[in-house]
Image 1: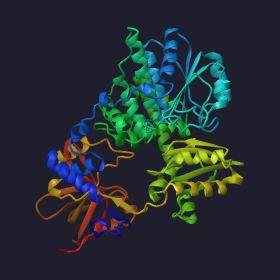
Image 2 (image 1 turned 180 degrees about the vertical axis):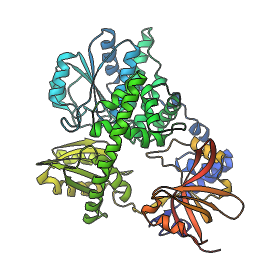
Image 3 (image 1 turned 120 degrees about the vertical axis):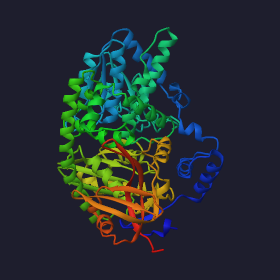
Image 4 (image 1 turned 30 degrees about the vertical axis):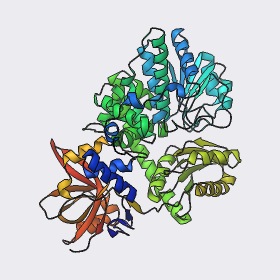
Length: 581
């Protein structure tokens, strides 16, 4: 049954309210915990039961951090890493070109620097070398180093690892194959022989656990390692930017990492915050939508190692210069992305958006933006999406998935079946290389595999809500309490509430496409709202010409900090006409 009887909103969506079991659990929490009903609905959705709210709202890393040795090869990886440190051996770090890879590399570089050691950073070029270790690069690094640590890559790179000619340790989280590369250690929660308990970790989370184990081994020998808590800003950035689920230890890592980041002690992140014009306390939103894309811009369309170098530099002047360059590249990336997105969406719509998989492929589409465009297609359709840039006889693509559908496993299955030249990833994201003459067959087979997992069953037009709220209840105190149930992101969507039968008391168009408004229930309380992109569709015109009619309004509550004045604001997602009472 549609929530508030909204079967077709102004944006064409059906509204879905909390499930009955969530409502029952929320009511039990209200009675036992004496917390605001709106917060209890969010807690109930997150699976919190009576007696658990205190620990959930104040997650402690010491309670949630797993034993690093619960991961296979962890002890061996830390031992070899420490051996290289103690013996002043030459260490190289081979990192992926995204935020997770850059953050992972910066974690190791920072730790080593505090121990008086330096390491060589190597990040492959996305276009010239592609993802992960390659034979020429590994051979070159192997000749000049005693140990290569591969971060956020390497689990499927049997040939290049063998070609290195020196010891290799892999710290990764991408889905492993039936066999592993022959090297010192492969630490990966998504190895086939792992139990999956830590499958939600990103690579930086795995690297952090390795450093925990390294510190523990040093302590057993009477030595002391660097303060690992100070490194959590990097772990938080990687976890959010890599769209890792914000559950379990990930949630605690991000919560603590945001506190560390707020101290602005890491030059690279401080410069990044400045160039992104962040003037409030950092949040998961900032990491995912302001900082992450800028760090990624170097690997997408510019210098591959720029993001990792920014995150690891200790020089504020160097950090500012690199942050400025990344900001410039990010602007260029947005322009390229806009062109590819329009073409990809048009092609996908022509093909049809009802299949389990939505996909598009085009000549010369930049490999650095296909992943972002795949994300946009996924968001628009609530289906896994693949976008491929064709070049000659091959195409390189990237995919994004929806909750409950393991895209990485399906892509790997296609590779073993010979329909892809190569492919891999994790549940929510994957990359692939496909021959032009197998493109259609590969996408048809992938759609079939994803359909068996339930892809395409969720309606693309559903808007999920956490319940009703009245303007008088929308207070800064409520927002603070809702924030305590965060951070919000992958597998933990931010709370969204519906305000029923509201009258619009003020409306103003901002720029070309945004809308500012205020609304009231007639009981004296008033809430301001902002709707970005309102005039890109029917929402803006309908609300602008409201004519005094009542509307159901839905969105996320936030604090608007403007000119030193803080006020409650609704970030409007959707609206629907309400019947006159």
